[in-house]
Amino acid sequence: MKTLLFVNTRPPHGSVKAQEGLDALLMGSAFAECSALYLGDGILQLLDGQDTTQTDQKNFSLTFGALRDYGVDQVFCSKTQLDDKGLEPSDLVINVAALVDRDIAALFSSHDVVLNF
Amino acid sequence: MKFAIVVHGAPYSDQAPLSALSFARAVLAEGHEIYRVFFYQDGVHTGNRAITPPQDEVNIQRLWSELATDNHIELIVCIASALRRGVLDQTEADRYEKSCASLDPAFTISGLGQLIDAGLNADRLVTFGC
Image 1 (cartoon, each protein chain N blue to C red):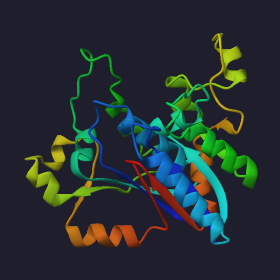
Image 2 (image 1 turned 120 degrees about the vertical axis):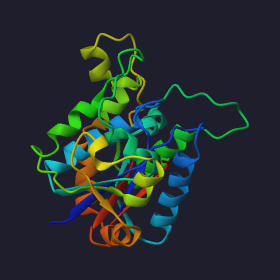
Image 3 (image 1 turned 30 degrees about the horizontal axis):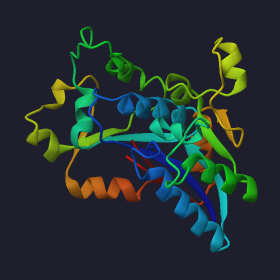
């Protein structure tokens, strides 16, 4: 069975793209072994304590807690980019493995299919 | 080789649907197969048959529909993305009691499972638009 890597680079709000990326990841997990990588502003999707009550947008960050139930336990981000944003792993809503750049490159080559969102 | 093509960008707002169209033509010209074209996110607007560009511009929806009809290519728009953007076929228009359907008949509404299936069964999956 092929392995799928979902690469998420969009900030959580301002468009529905991040939410639709998560939808695709959840669907993928029903069919194949899936990993998720959050790069650039994509890491902001995982920030804990998001409040969208004043923006009429869905707080889909609450859904990340279900990833493990869907069998997605390989979730990664860039350590360099986490540091650049002044964030700690404890600021995120789920456990995420922070990788150095060389390991991110290895992550791409170790998966059969890469889907960008 | 079997290619799956994914389109994320909206026609005219984004180059993605036209770049993907050029790529699809090149794939066929080289004798390869197109397993499926999956329109996701703003890409679903590509199937909007109400698209009416000025006379000196191409009709991107029509170009895709013609390519698909001539070459028997499956064009899928994601149902979740399409419904929230008002791209509906007659079945969905009836279901939600909307006055008109907007999806061109060369396109089919289906689920995200079709994207995953394309990733698993095509030799290459190529995404246009970010």
